[in-house]
Image 1 (tube, one colour):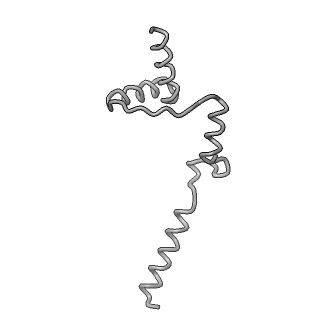
Image 2 (tube, rainbow, N blue to C red; image 1 turned 135 degrees about the vertical axis):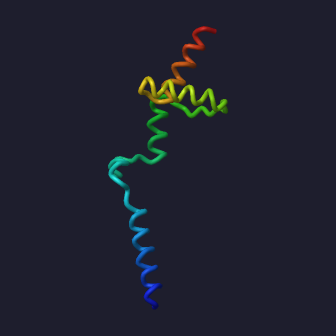
Image 3 (cartoon, rainbow, N blue to C red; image 1 turned 180 degrees about the vertical axis):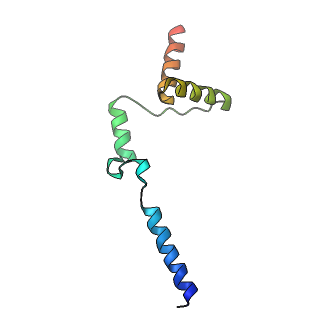
Length: 88
């Protein structure tokens, strides 16, 4: 094996090791739930996925409102829908 081929192999091995490791800023990997587990928990709480297509400016307004309230977009959309349904 040539010196350059050996160095390339070392670099590929290093990159593979870096990709396999989860940085600490993303939390403890032992606490990560699978999608299936998270979906089961959400169903127990009575939450279901509800996809809609909205204008980008409206979505940005909802995101800004969620950021201002320090809450999730899901919670803001739920509040807005509830208040709109009460007015009908």
